[in-house]
Image 1 (cartoon, rainbow, N blue to C red):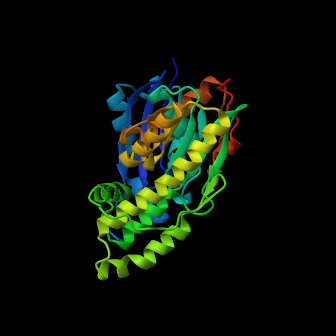
Image 2: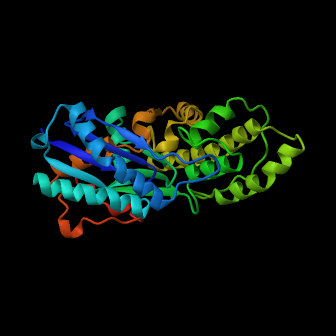
Length: 335
């Protein structure tokens, strides 16, 4: 019964999780929150992570009721993500692995999301919509790789939402995307926005530029409310995502869809995906904010799968990479 401890810190969330044979024993997390109208810078985010990571480690062990002797492997996020936060967490993971004399595993952040989603929902072989602040991909498993069928050609959908939140000075607590979601529920007017799907890929930079330019003018003239703009942005970008996911499902003959990543806990996105799946006679799988949003348990779960399959990361290769594509990893733990 391998027990794996996972460190995640690729963006503004820092988490430490413990997983044993498909059971999440602990999953504490902290978030670096910046003032409204601002984003989070790599250096500041890394300082936040360094300040809390050891407390989180102790909290995770206490919550799981374990000691260092009970841990079989240390997993950490190798990438993709922001450089400084990734490095700050990798240094701690390497140090802990050496102090405790445990094997080390560098995990792909995207695959962490997928494996966590599969574990929590019970989905067997889904087409995956992975949507977050840094990534937007439609993925399906084939021949020991998670193949990318479509993706953003510029910015991620979560980044589009976050940057629009800065235009309206929407709070970053608990997250700009969550606050946009709540405002969108009160929107009543659908403002026409650019809709950019290019084959299996999507583009969000144009819609962001358009709404950034038009927002203040439309608000000043009373054409719409901030809630209307939040509603319109969500409806448009989510429709784009549903379209390319359905096309991938048709190509793969898939009867399962799984939504993962921080944007994946948006209830409106889940509703739109559910409607599409029902019309196809397919089933939608999704999780809540405990497991959609970046967390340590997802890295522990992917590490658990890799550990059982015989993967190990030597110290000489235990660095980080800001660009680490989902399809670069050989998925030896699946048939």
